[in-house]
Image 1 (cartoon, rainbow, N blue to C red):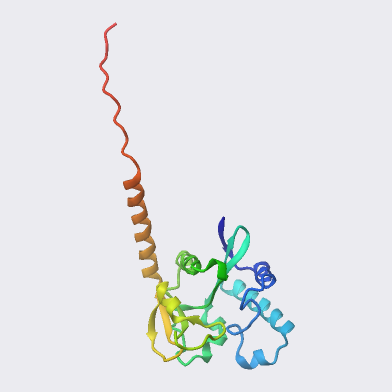
Image 2: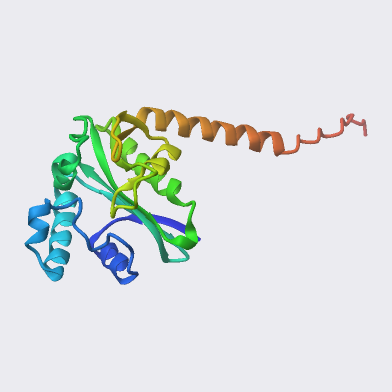
Length: 212
């Protein structure tokens, strides 16, 4: 059974217990200088404090995908002002009308579920209102894997487009209005499909009144 739940401090503990990548790191949540000054235990406390601050000041900032109550993946997003690590990129800053997508991770045995998490993020932001887009820093396909930077190819496959080119870390954007239109089109297409597959009702035989 597939379930998508909100990212909370308790769920963050679940991610750490499952040894999910990036559940402990502070690549996005702190500046490089601050990260260098903290021990591993201090880093865990810092990440907990960051999540609590975002939840208090902005609201929900992530979703966790569970398959049969087992962590299959998660997504994290927040306003740029709460993501100091984003400032290190050459293609920064993020546009004023967008939030930053920092992390999308899916466990290897559940590859292909990344779109589910991106859709859950888009649905949350659309329902919340006040946000026009989501932006992310991508990693060019030919660049060796860098921790916590999403592949640009993945971002493109789930609806992001490049808004500022760069040889290694382009900045990419997904317009939530397009995401909303796309979701409505999918729902309408599914409705038509269900209607086409549903057999037409058999007309009732005509009856004539009989005199008694």
